[in-house]
Length: 125
Image (tube, rainbow, N blue to C red; front, side, top):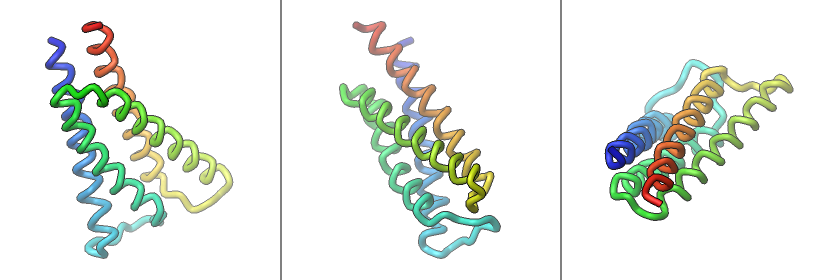
């Protein structure tokens, strides 16, 4: 049962991470142009964290000790960026609602991942 939680957490990390790399990478390379306002720093952040998410997912899959720390760090970064986007939106900056929803989704997914990994660690403890 504990291994199933780690496998689920790993997939929850790897799949959205890979999608962020694919989608953000195509925007950065000029292969696609979204129909909404794009924040270049956010696209770069999403691609970088996409790679980090895939690495973290692999670590979770292999049950590495560092996986909980890395998952918590990713969650913290996503939460921080979500707050920045909400603040910018509140001050009428051009932030696409889809960008806010995507970051909210990432933050929720990483909250679940951290809970799955933490629960396994404390159960083994």
